[in-house]
Length: 181
Image (cartoon, rainbow, N blue to C red):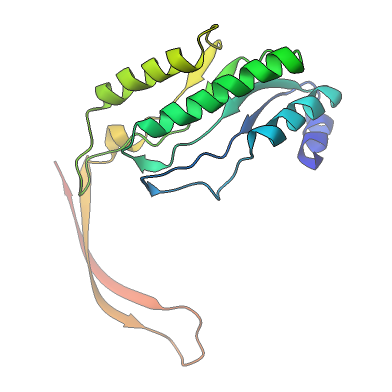
């Protein structure tokens, strides 16, 4: 609530949105501990935002970085759809935006499905999660799926050392080369 108070003082009437924690199962880099809240807290934050004269605008989630399991969008969008309905009916606030973060995978060591497959399935999940009408805006950050495999950096660790016996950090020496296709 402190953050909402600070926002209301610095930018009265600002649009705010709230990030939900998702499972991130199967992601190369799960972001479950990075930021976000459970749906019940999001409801409380929407109520508080109204009290602080802010405009609750939407909900956000991230399925995890380099996420190959498209089903993670399904479960998150189901939760988001239910929460948005609950907020509309219980708090009388109509949220307008869903930010689906990123997570669309690139072809690294393990191949990823084509981005068109993810898009088709995510669109179907949106339809399932928002049967009574879609929010005005959906955002997704394609990131690495567009540029992640544009080049490769090959490294070889040649030495691992500490500067002293009491040094907390390990230092690496490496050689590297770069290749672009």
